[in-house]
Image 1 (cartoon, rainbow, N blue to C red):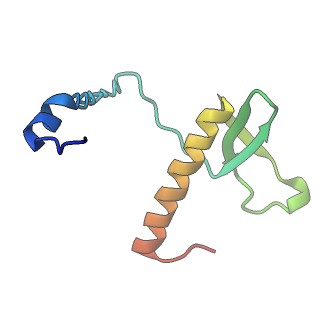
Image 2 (cartoon, helix red, strand yellow):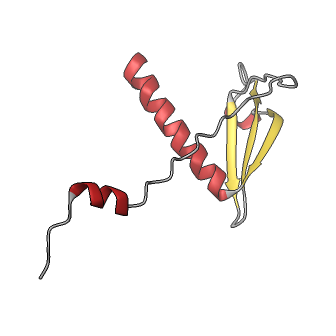
Length: 103
């Protein structure tokens, strides 16, 4: 015959859930350099996503004469690129809520 367990006994019997340690991240910006880019190009292979950043000085040139001065290439794993995608999507959603939709 089944008997009802005392609630206190249930608490004792159930193992306590392990507390999740909160990771602390510190950013070391001692060697951080800032750059300006008004151009970005992206390509990918199965193993990596490549982002090229640069500056277009196309003030008075026709589109056929456009020259982009590339300054940085960032190579990411597809997993890191997916996290960047999620981060940028969230950032732009917040930006547009604050300042209006970009077209």
